[in-house]
Length: 250
Image 1: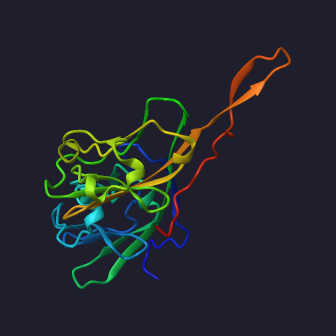
Image 2: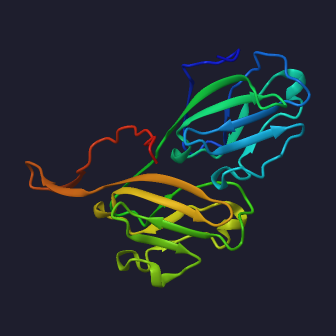
């Protein structure tokens, strides 16, 4: 086993919606000038590659494009930590940092497990609208396609305003910002939410750069109860939400 291998991964837990998270890794061996540092996820997809210079990302998987960064002076400091911006539940995986020499031999390896809590939104029935938040990197490709689905795999919204693909249940009830790809704001506004709208919503960006996020929406219904004086009052029919963790298999 190469020096510095850790069989038990370090665990980092964050909320979906934070701007960034750092996956810590400190070199346990002397790093040669020709060292190659490679971060991969639990599906063996390339997250970030550093070799002689930062930014050697030709093999990077599309979901990580423009979302990863390592420090420039890592050979000197031995700090191999990876910064991942705008983490979502999709990023809840085990990540491996591996250092290779010129011959391709493994010098060290470390694993970090990232857990990202699923975004939860709760409103009461009767509000004018509710926003399902999704912030990511700015300047996404102009030809990218953004799709929101509900728990029944019905298309809630398709950018840009392709109403023909939208399920009729959501017709005239959804909107996104005018320029979501440029702004990196893929949030969805759902108008006139009712208790029937409660459930898990998913958003995915298709194109040269991909993004994915889940949002758990709970709309608390209102029920009428009659007190001893005969007055009719409203009360919430929902229970308190429970924290959700991302499904590691997503």
